[in-house]
Image (cartoon, rainbow, N blue to C red; front, side, top):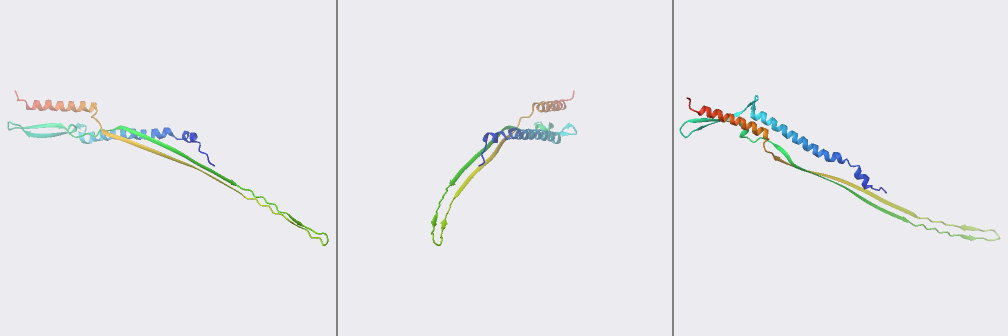
Length: 185
C-alpha cells in the first residue's frame, strides 16, 4: 500500500516560485503599462521632442477671431494603467484512500484409508490435502492543485511630474496668448 506523507508533500511544494511567479508577472505587467504610457506620450504628445499642440480658432463676441493653442496631452486621456490590487489563491489538496482486504482460508483435509490382507497381500492407502488462500490490497493517492489569480487594474491619476510639466506649458501658452491679444502701445 502506498502511504501519502502529507507533511512531506506540502514541504516539497515550490511555494517560493508559486508566490513570486504571479507577483513577478504583475510587476512585469506594470512595467509594460508604464512603457506604453511613455510611448503614447512620445507618439501623441511630442513632435521631434517638442510639445504637439492643437489649435482652436473661435469667434469673439466683438466679431473678431481668437486662436487658442493647447498641448494635445491636456485634452486626450493618457493611458496610466496600474494594478490596483491582486489576489493569489493557492489550494493544494491531498486525498489518501487506502483499503486493505485480506482474506485467508485454509482447508486441510486428510483422508487416509488403509486396507490390507494377509493372503494375497492387498494394501491401499489414500491421502488428500487441500489448502486455499487469497489476499487483496488496494491503495490510491489523489493529488490536485489549483491556482487562482485575480488582478484588478485601474486608470491611475496623472503623475505629479507630468501635471507640473503640462501646467507649465499651459501657463506659458496662456501668457503668449495674452501678449498676442494685448493692444500694441
